[in-house]
Amino acid sequence: MRVIAKLFMQMVALLGLSSSVLAQSLGRPEAWQYKLQPAATPVMRQVEDFHTFLMIIISSIVALVLGLLLIVIVRFNARSNPTPSRTTHNTLVEVLWTVVPVVILVMIAIPSFRLLYLQRVIPPADMTVKITGNKWYWSYEYPDQGGIAFDSNMLGNEEADAKREPRYLAVDNPMVVPANKTVRIIVTASDVIHAWALASFGQKIDAVPGRLNEDWFLVDKPGVYYGQCSELCGKDHAFMPITLRAVPEAEFNAWVQSAKTAGVEEANKMFARLPSGPETLASTTVPPQQ
Image (cartoon, rainbow, N blue to C red; front, side, top):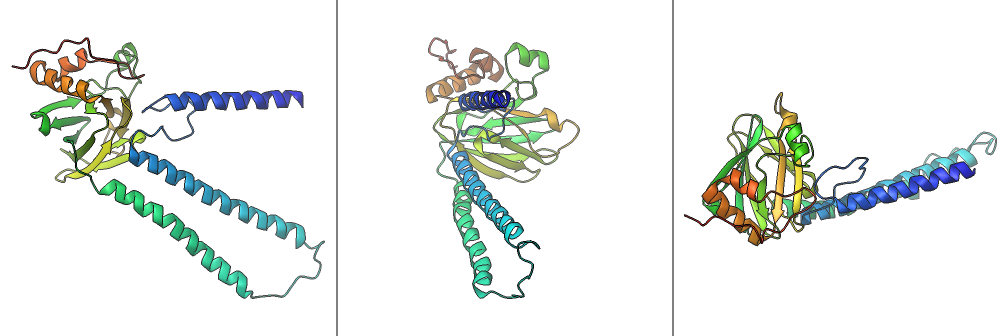
């Protein structure tokens, strides 16, 4: 018993440690992760709340059904109840098993519609980014920042390790956006159907050739966030990841200026940072705009 108790306490401590590590990590999967990624947008926070609400309802239903089964097993087995009842109808029970599911569905529908409304009704945006899915990489355009455009390809394993970024998730040119600003995205594809998805944003939107889909997000926690194409698009589907850097507005403006003058690749080298979080760019010299 002491050994079992000791193992149990170690498991509890390990789960507590894992939860604290997950709470500190942003925008990337972690080993032994069993929960959703930490929310970085208002939409994802409501997704988390709705998920918790659903889990409570489902768990309550499971507990109720289990309790009823145990009552039936104990009270109405052949030994305890040798003469079974011949009751075939019970008005109260029939009303309850009709009304209660309707009430539960209404309880689920109300927050569900609120979440759908939040996701699909795009608020006034501070900037727009056009995202194009290609076989097999992403392209980004910034029409509000003078038409900055670049491609984003996955880093090789050795380069990702050298930069201390996760394999199969890191890219050479990440999407850069200002934190605490509403970003409207226009998503399309040049060849086949792709899907732009970031788990910590609660976001997944299809990129369809010949069609423009739009969505929005507001990142309230500066940092680096990772995602992947979530549509089976071809042989290299697993190798077109998404990396998004959310930085303070001043740093974003500096990145834009550097991208215009020196190019996106040089701007990313100049403003490179680790996935653990943003670094200050106050000491970085930005080339003068020509």
